[in-house]
Length: 153
Image (cartoon, rainbow, N blue to C red; front, side, top):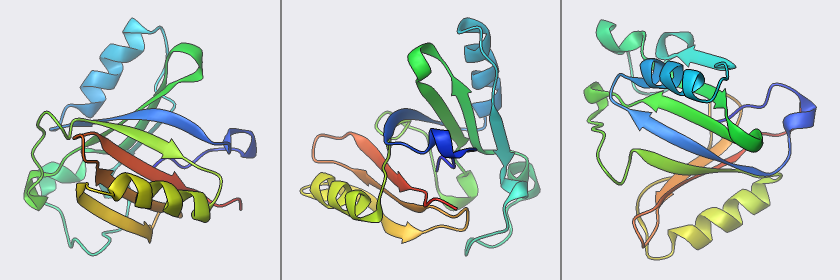
């Protein structure tokens, strides 16, 4: 769910998305020290209006919805906290996702469709409240892929 902050960042790229069970901020602070970097973006679930899920429990509202940490060679670590109230549990297989940020809806659809072949546990490509066209799929080999396209303003 990467939303670039300026036009120069709007190019196709691959980032790593990490899922945590309430430890995103702590983990990214640790990684920031390891990589001598700084968290460049952090939003909480309380920052985003509920999108069909209804109100979150008070103990989940302050959890990290999306955070970004640049590391080596321009690579971006992104993170979120999974929500127990929505039945989300972190486990091997859903704790790391490759995030493909692409230049067009057509490319997003092409990649999602190709990765979906023989896959499971997907959220289909759809327009999201944060302005992106987004979907996620577990491919036939057990690798999670997030496909994202954020149109130019």
